[in-house]
Amino acid sequence: TIDNKNSMLVYGGDIWDKGGADFYVIRQLLSLHTRYPSRVHFIMGNRDINKLRIVDELDFGETKRLPKHKGVYWLRGTGLPGDPEKPLGSTTMTETAAERLKWMLRGTMGSVNAFELRRKELQRERLAVMNSQSAFSTQDCSEHETSCDEVIVSDDDVAMSYLHSCNPNLGLMSQYLSHAKLMIRFGSVIFLHGALPTIEANSFPLPWINPESDKSVGHETLTEWIDNLNDFALDQITNWKEFGKAKQPRDAQEDFWASKGGYSNTSSGGKLFGNLLQYGMNTLPDKSKNQSVVYNSWMRDGMPRKDLFSLDEQSWLENLFAKEGLQLILSGHQPVGDAPWPIQLSNNNWILPCDTSFSGDVCWTSAEKASLGRGSRPNGRGEVAVSETLIRCCQRTGKLKSVKIHGCLSDGSHYEINNLLDVDDKHIGRPLLKKLPYTDNTKEATITDFWVKAKLRQQYLLSAGKGFHVWNSLLDHNGLKGV
Image (tube, rainbow, N blue to C red; front, side, top):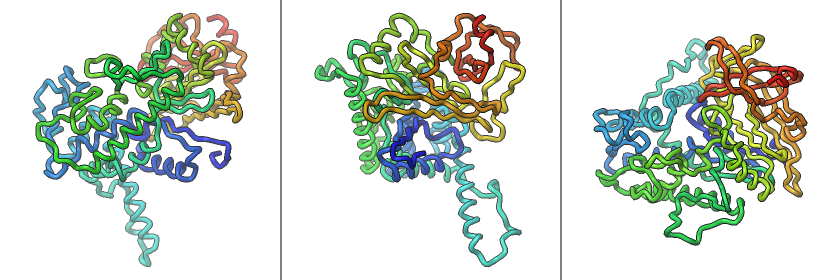
């Protein structure tokens, strides 16, 4: 447990928008950090970084009027609300803070249910306060018990909760981001939200710096690069806090950072913290790929990237592991089913994507198994699925000693991998060499690639992905040898 003085907790980011308990979770994490500041660590996810936009695009400022919004660059050419090339023609982005926030969450942050989930959480909090007050009342309140649905939380209340919680100096998100980092390294283990961009010949990317104008930038080691990334993030958060204090009047014709995006954005917010906002995005304004550890992924269309195993791509990755003494990289960002998805490299080195936030959507192709689904949960994790990854390192050398993964799958069954490093079965963490036919309840017979995730007693757990959808299957040792 975290009470053990030799233990640490690393939270992988994306703390809000999906689970329906934003305030509860962030308060628990901040409380843990206050009690154990040297042993509780936070990673910045894209859903954390994008909250810097709240004060920029929703703050009324001295005019008490919501500034005009010109759309967001990543919707350019889509024809959707917020496409900068189309006239707004809607009050969604121009009238109240609540309506703009609904559009921002749903249309630009991929958080379709976040507004209503926040409303439900505010209802629960207010009901708890009401009940605590009635508990000390001398009157019998049993006949006047109130349900959550009876507690009134207006759209404006929800909008104000976002403005307050994302306040650069006082908000809960500000406290989280002040302690969070883009990458963390402990010995031979690295934690990050997304994935490493391609790194060759010590060319560690710092995309906010123009190499033509600054020839002095360069790194000899991975650790130096990690330090630079974290210093950059801290500087940007510090600038964001100054922006929140300044309350400078905004020019009515000025763009927000999101309207044009890019590094070196010249809007008032963009000049101060726009580089971090851009670093948290998937693409640049010219639609090219952003070289970011936040939004890159080890997965492509639901499966581990095939280029990781090509001669060229594996070369830089294995060279990096060997040169830097790495053994394991852990990440999140993209859902990988109801259990972490081991990717085995050579020399017993591993990549471990751990995002199981859509566990409740997993389908089982084996007749004896069936997912329990999302149930009554407001998030995609479902009623029963949970996973924990426990890492043991030598305090003296930093070398990895064990990687234990255990938890409960989407069908309710428990699983455990005692030590990924001791697995002498070379199937684990690798793709099947042949395609495997399967059927499930939602599709006709299909042929697809499967990946060997783990060995569960006498059977192997296989997974195949497509987009955010994952299918699990079971195969015994003889069946696995056949494919």
